[in-house]
Length: 346
Length: 165
Image 1 (cartoon, rainbow over the protein chains, first blue to last red):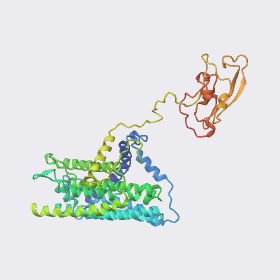
Image 2 (image 1 turned 30 degrees about the vertical axis):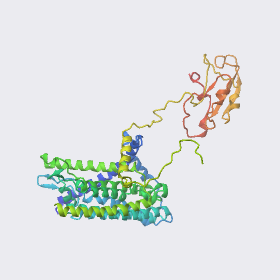
Image 3 (image 1 turned 180 degrees about the vertical axis):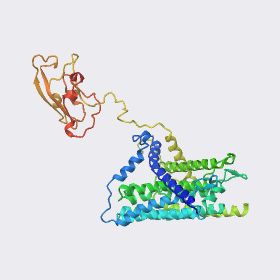
Image 4 (image 1 turned 90 degrees about the vertical axis):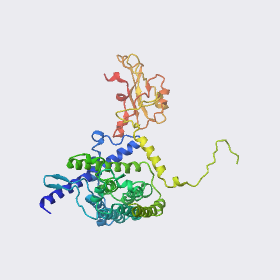
């Protein structure tokens, strides 16, 4: 790899990191605004025009709060928990293809940090690492509510990872590749040879399973049992204060952003959009593609919030019932049906 | 037991049918309901800037009234303080001197008149008790403050405007 390539990659990493932090920052604002609109309220509107500086005020508050490490907590693990949580949240975006390749003269800029051939597996790996932050934090707090939250998080994530993996297997049978770049390229345009190119139209059930599991993996309502306020005080982050709590809350929003990006890439064509072949300049297509991808991501983030303010939380046994007795059988059935269709109709 | 009215309705608990058991149609219904609220006008009243209109019999901050010639009506009879269930009102009476006829209507007036707004329960008994129609609870909401002593309102805050001119 040449020096120029490394510099370009480095700049790309910095940009993506900054964007995911910015989006996470403004997701907190959006969450409060969206919640307000769903409940016929106004939401934050005092800090700056339309309350736009609210996230910075919140962030400053988090930084300036007193930092408390409980006496009986394990100090090292207590700090390691939120650090691991935010780390795993941030590295997930590395394999997502943000757009087509940009060409300037002889330089080709690949709008993807790492085009590895096991992209989907990487995502699954990062997602399953994410629960360690919650588990370690809950365990290190030395508080029964935190521990209960951590146990719930662990069992929930393990249960829903299975059906998430199974729903992805059905997708992989259709695409035949694990590289996210190739999966995105296969969904080029919108309509090809009499059928939609986007994977959603080939795997509707798979997408449904995937989005339900994504809700569970990001600990969002209706699956927010790990931080269930009504039963567990604050769940796994009961003992946390200051920026360590901020990291936990922040990683939830980054997770939401990354899983929205993964859903958009795997099932909704990524950076592809209808009639993209009618535009002549490939660079313009690439830039438009990036905008389209972000539009899709924002829609999914909005959908996460929309569901949060609509559906109440599941009970713990209902959660397990849904995961083990409904989603996993459905995912296996989806694999079988996909296999049959591929074998006999293609 | 015999039913007291004919309004009693016996609910039958049926097992959920297939569409109810897979949740999704009901979830879609719920999402539609929240979405309809998304575009509704917010009901928020942004308090210090916007104020909701008070009802006609709203009882707010007290004011000591003046008569048509701008003289204080209060004669410091003490009936308001006597009637006050919260014992929020205190006053010290004084005799009107020569040349003060344009200030006080009666021969006796309240030199000091204090209402402790933290004790006041805004019942309006003082305005009912007043024989001179001197006190009314027709003001705004009592503003917030930092110190308890600042909630003891004297004549400077209670008496109607022309005094301060």
